[in-house]
Amino acid sequence: MLYFAWVRERIGTGQEEVSPPAAIETVAALVDWLAARSEGHAHAFADRTRLRAAADGVFVSLDALLGPADEIAIFPPVTGG
Image (cartoon, rainbow, N blue to C red; front, side, top):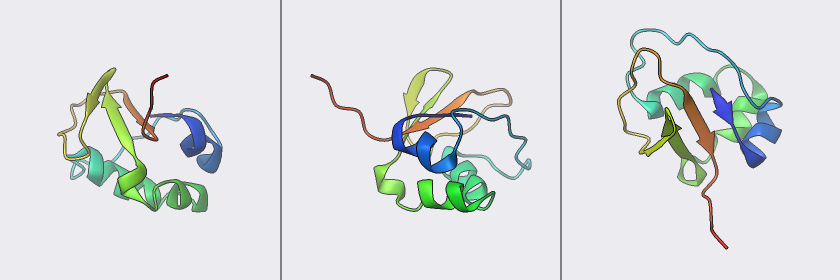
């Protein structure tokens, strides 16, 4: 797992290795599972509408299916400029 911007700040780390249960099949389910890990995770993931995700460096929806070795990144919406 990689976390960026205020997501990283609320969780307290920029990355962590996790081993979710086999029943976790989507990014959204992973976020739900992670939210139960700590108060910081719960705070970071409280408003799912403010989250974006990438799997192995490619933007994906929160409904995207997880692969067995995906690197998942969670971050706030990004704007260019």
